[in-house]
Amino acid sequence: MEISELDPNIKGTQEELKRHQEKTRKFKEYVQGLFIDLYTQDEFNRRVDAIFNETFKRNQNDK
Image 1 (cartoon, helix red, strand yellow):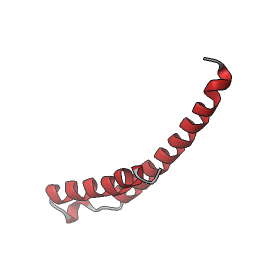
Image 2: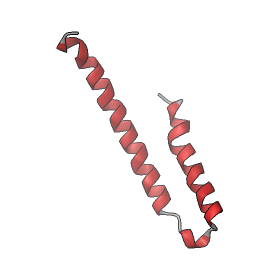
Image 3: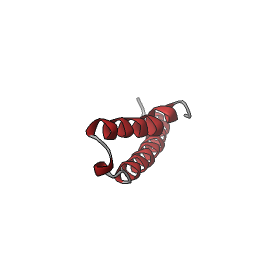
């Protein structure tokens, strides 16, 4: 495979990395906004799971 053939793949991968970095940043902000002392461990885990699903899984369909 020639370097010229790899260039579009690299650009696409870089864009995908940027999208994932933005999703990760949003997820981190959402989770940091939760106050663990307000929830039981199970409630906190459910909220984190819901935030994860909202941030990552829903957006997989948005490609």
